[in-house]
Image (cartoon, rainbow, N blue to C red):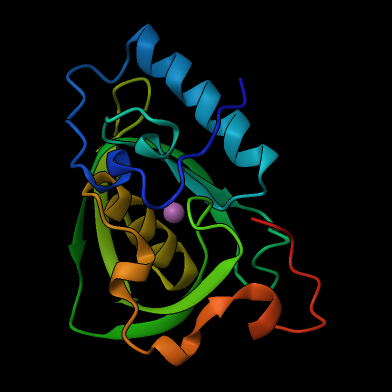
Length: 176
Ligand code: NI
């Protein structure tokens, strides 16, 4: 079922989400169906459970060719429970981000260029990956939601934060 996405200002987006005790439960399976429906309906590259009001450490992400990120390399569709990120190296990269909870805006955010991440899939199996580039960016953005962090809280240069229509005039960027 497509659910409403909470918008920045809602206190539930600033809370720390709770660890899931059992990944392969019917409740988590049902939550994941709603998250996927909601993400697809909005053309999002990712969604975290707190964005639909569920304070659990669950994220989904993935992009084959996302109209909102036309230059981004594909990211495998992934459902991950209790994800944990470890940065690999000190390198940071700037890149544009948007968020379904911050509609109509974009900003440049520094992220770790290369990460290791680990968690469980909905069958309780371990997901253990190394990621870089857009894939690493999406994982960091979604996992930030689990700690109550929205991307504008990481923007450093506010000349590169604003309304999509003003930042990219004439470019047909899908709505968020
Ligand atoms: Ni987001």
